[in-house]
Length: 389
Image 1 (cartoon, rainbow, N blue to C red):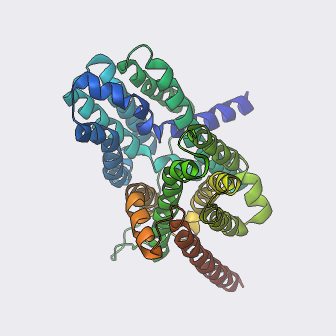
Image 2: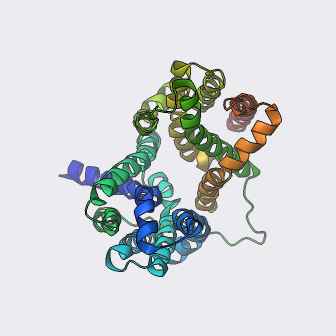
């Protein structure tokens, strides 16, 4: 009985991450929504991107709200907001209400975004924590894939029916409220000097920006490169649909990889990203290299981010770890935003019109990141060894 209770608790803790990337779930119904609401292209695009903006704003607020209400209540409120905001268009389908719906959805997701990681770190330790953090990363990809698929089926009823997928937030909130205990944050000690964030956290934020930016650039440009190789009739959607599956598998095996390689897990993840970029850069006319590069690019995020979150309490204090987690998630969202700009800049740097040219720049960039990471972690390890002697 105790084992079953522990299993349900893990399911509840992991389940809340199914919603975290769900703002894109209804992207497939945007053409029908545009026609039904009689709105412009810019208004349509606003509905698609607006949740990402409110996610960032409410990620910043989440630590403050969690301090006041507690982490458990904050997560439940976030889920309920996301669910209510998500399903509004099912009931009222005019542009203003859909706009409010998307704002509310983003607010709810942002409110508990970083806490989904913090809760695992607070409840579990050791290999269990590492394994669950890897699985949590996979939950995001599974949620996105399943919700997009379900929304695609529901659009056959009506475009508003697609928004029913967001109702998954309600059973998730109920299960979390029922099976997961409150985690009490330690009282902050009274100090005369305000506690400062370890500068290393900002390096991790920059890393998050670069990794997500590069990942989005790969997925966005893949179709164009593949079409150049195989012709205008080539359907890239099937391969892009396979991409998250590799990330899901990588997330589930993270615990094992982390046990086998330890600190080298981070090196391995970045190294795979370097190889992925090089394969795409050299894929001019070669579909096999392009596909290898695409599929490999889904692995680093599934290993690097769980590794970072699993070790975050080593570089920052318990009073700042939640905010540090929030900053890293903000970095991920920034990376998503600036990916198109980054592609344009790197294209200019190479001075080439080739669609694959920017990935040489990304390869060099991540070789540099790998070297810096190895140097910094080894220096940190020596410092910890010296302190324990």
